[in-house]
Image 1 (cartoon, rainbow, N blue to C red):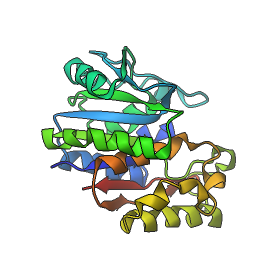
Image 2: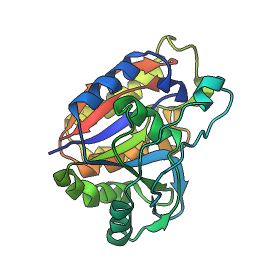
Image 3: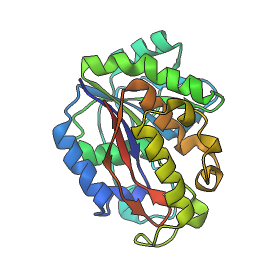
Image 4: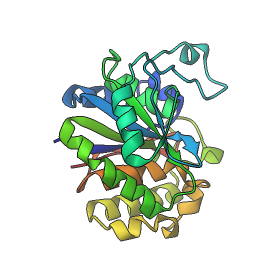
Length: 245
């Protein structure tokens, strides 16, 4: 049975820049071959839960200030309207037509560069509690038995105010929080993770919560956590990937 995944998607330049995280995602896609992907990205926030029923979701370039080559990237993966409409019914989610934001298409374009795996996007409900987000993951867990990959795409640490050169050293306040999360994940301390805002340096690493919250969905959808990748880019973007088996 497939794991659920939490992917730290970092900067949109991950799509073009050969970093350890870039190379890992390319390799990971060779070992996981799902029938479809259901992804919750930090970059589609909404008041209520929504699901994209697009048959051919567009590639959304929801960023600015990057090279022209990044804006020329297209990821023409098909949608899966039948699966999307099923999720809308089962989760009481609003069906909408929407493309793939960079939290979805950047990592998936590395994992499945042929764009031959259908993708369905779920929104991140901003008003939901941590426990409700984990419960959403639990409701998605059945998909893993159907060879559907459940992905939460965010960032283990995400303070863009402190971003530095790509190979900048890692400040203590970043590693302190990342280590705390890692220790709670591998010990399966879900109660602590559902109260993650009380972790040391939590607010410094996440001035807003949306990049951490997809981890809670992925956690709910799977079992024990295993860290498959660890690296840091720009000093403050921890690129960790966790599989919940």
